[in-house]
Length: 336
Image 1 (tube, rainbow, N blue to C red):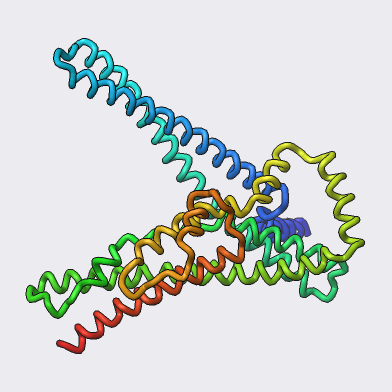
Image 2: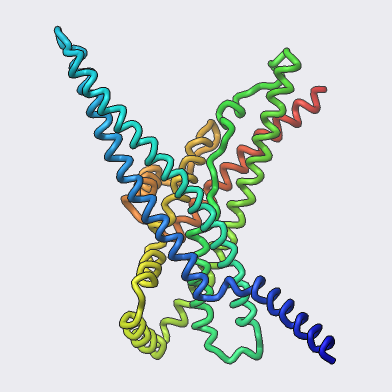
């Protein structure tokens, strides 16, 4: 009897452990913890970037002083050496600060990837409630929660890198004009690698577009729900109550995510680099360059609709680029 009870107890603990491992880390307390860690890291790295910027300015001034002294008719070597020794110290500080930034960047990317997974799990669990006939809660409020997590996931999604291969060079390669077989084979492998990278980028962008479409659709439902006057009254009351008892950390998180358009800046910058890389004959941009520059420079916030248009533009250009590369390989195969 004792053995049977022990076995049952062990089975219970194993089941409980599996449950905790599967769902425990998406509890609100845990999410808030990781969000705060992510936010604190972004604050720290911003401080280090400011320090690095200041150090670089001081370092450049010291170098200018050295150059100015050297150009004199009778340069004072002692002055030059004194300035140089100070510049060496500043250079060391620059290197240390850069190492800190690199470390923070690695930690931030880990947090972003982890939060992306947590938000996805949380969204999926809330969606199950939405379609659960037994769910007795308010569907409008539930949609509001889902939208909130989708917005957060949009901000912390894994980064999209710029193209590592030179599109202009590849587009202008004429394989038929290369007589050296080894050189030709090298370019063929180069094109194949670029195609694989392009396919990966298109896949990431399509996934991001799908998430954004889902979010915009849900946002419309939420907006319709919020238009209900009773909900507006209740929301105002709940906000006042929450603000009275809210912790500093949670306030920071809410403020951070409330300004989500600003937080899309890293993605916008990367996509603008890709667009710039794909500037070749026959691949004309449909976006207003001046408006895109405003988004990149942070002088104008990008709306979610405009961000969706940017994704469409990037995917379109990547698809044209992919077609050109495929034609080059197909023509080479036909020529053999």
